[in-house]
Length: 326
Image 1 (spheres, rainbow, N blue to C red):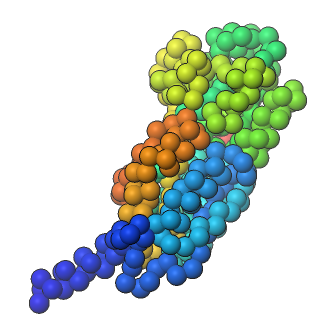
Image 2: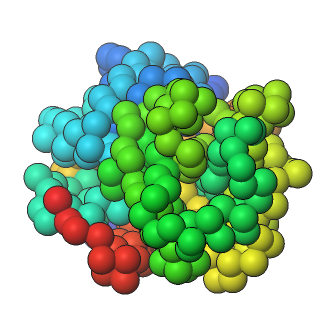
Image 3: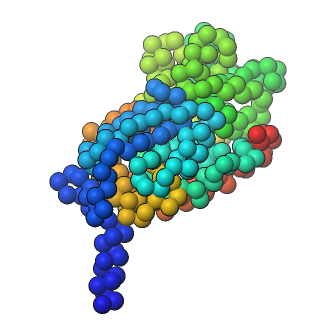
């Protein structure tokens, strides 16, 4: 009897299994469309990633995945909406590295980045790009740093919003290079690029997928990527470390989560469907091309550990850079 009870429990917890490309659960989950929220502007990297993985999951779960953008506060508005949603598997969230950064940049949040959610899986890791308009006087990151040192506080950089990985990447550059470039938040990548091209800010930290066409056309100059190695999407753009700023390393990521209390069987099914989708060569290529990054799935426990590690890392950056919390 004990063996039979354990078998029944394991069957329930593992719940979802892939049969003919569809995840099937004992309670017939999912039986209706699923919402996938993200916290950044439509057309940006998070939106693109959400739509790609939504397509892959819909094929495996047998139900439409409806992507909804809820931009604002570095992704916090969407995360809060997911945290407060019914834990029934019909509201999911796509979060980026900014999800962990929020714990370091806000005095308090309406949710806990690690403990208010059930993690599903990471999806992809990718670098950011430090860029200027092509006619900007500085022609390299080294020259920009020199200009910033001559007149501290006279330059500014745009990002997708306060508390985003883009924001902290710029602040880490300030701390590592010993400069003071003032942060200007925008609502999404597209707005920051428009601001750069319009002369509102001289520098932005953006995502490779959005900046690549502008860099390739010559409208924008890519100074450096934030990862230790160059990205496949922008192979001619050097790294920050190549520019002489040693020890600098910023890579963001994207992953899926659900509200706390979502049944383990549903989380197991979603994890299985996600990992299966990430094995698809076409979907992998679309994700990697979208952000110039590397597809990397995980277990729910591994994703939670990542977020906890990132919170510690970025809390240190915020403290060293003396960034006032909001």
